[in-house]
Amino acid sequence: MKDQSKDPLYKLRFPIGQFSLPKQITNDLLAKQINTLDAFPAKLKSLVSHLSDDQLDTAYRSDGWTIRQVIHHVADSHAHSYIRFKWALTEDKPVIKYYYEDRWAELPDGKDGSIDVSLMLLTAIHSKLVTLLKGMTEEEFNCEFIHPEHNKTVKLKENVCIYAWHCDHHYAHIENCLKANSWL
Image 1 (cartoon, rainbow, N blue to C red):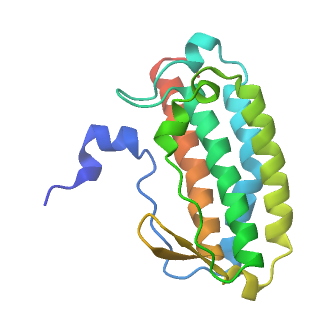
Image 2 (spheres, one colour):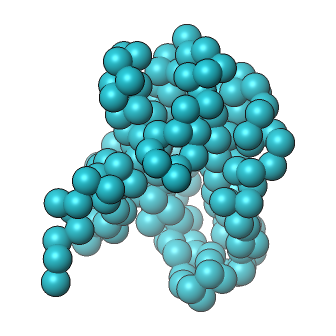
């Protein structure tokens, strides 16, 4: 079988590789992932706040989203994630609501909206999420929700890792686009 990671299109799509769940999620690893979530909004804002509309409307790869769409997607996705944490902490293994992120990215707010709104939303969500995560017990990190796309059970400690990866994944999309266009 061909190693996809050597394919240049794979590297554009997954610049830091696909998500891989750590075999063991320790307290130290969780703390590191929470720090990633805490720092992400300011880090992203610093990367993109100087970009022009033309730059924001540049796709990070052929047939990919624009930088603007990526920023709006991250805010939408992380808003969903925050709610998933709350559901799992207050309900017994809830089935979360799946959404079509590709369709959301094509809506007017995702295609044309000001990134300032999503950057503010991301800052607020991450502030609330990090406060929540820092106050959770080990038992709470083991609470679960069911993702209906594959009928998969996800522990909250796994979701922390998924979303820390998601931060780095999309940051790399944008950073690589800026480098490729000599904007960074």
